[in-house]
Each structure stands twice: as structure tokens, then as C-alpha cells.
Image (tube, one colour):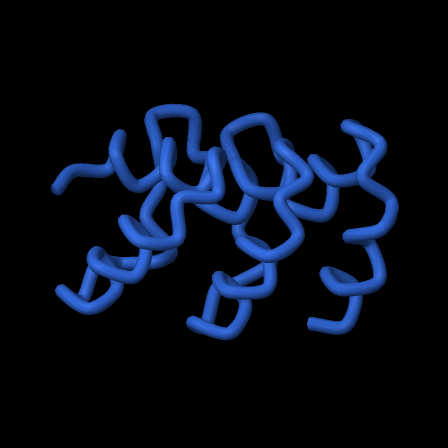
Length: 90
């Protein structure tokens, strides 16, 4: 399993793939070429349950992409304001 599959699964809410990858020790904080993490993909898509899962798995909310955005920024930019309180708690 590779990082492309990881990011796609996070964006699409594919919990089966995510859980399999987490069970193999996959790094939840890995980045794509733009510095975006799985939590960025999940918040961009508004995938609340995936955001919850990633946070439970120890995701670092302070990671910035190459443009200086974090998951909180993506949630705000995309209008997923229901995610802001969850991300602000961390």
C-alpha cells in the first residue's frame, strides 16, 4: 500500500483501507508532494468520521503544507465549519 492509496482512502472515507493501513503501522502524518496530510484531505472533503478517526490515531494538527495551510485552514476554506470545533480542541 502506498501514500496515494492512503490519501485517496482518507478523502473518500474508505475506513476498511485506512484500518488495514493503520494496522500495518502506516505513518498517519505522512505528506504528499504538496505537504498535505491525510487530515488535510479528510477536512477538505468534509469527512467528519474520517477526521475523528485520524485524530484518535494521533494525528498532529499543527502540520502545515507547502502553502502554509493546516487541516483547520482547509476546513474553513471549504466551508466545513462543523469540523472547526473538533480541530480547535486539539
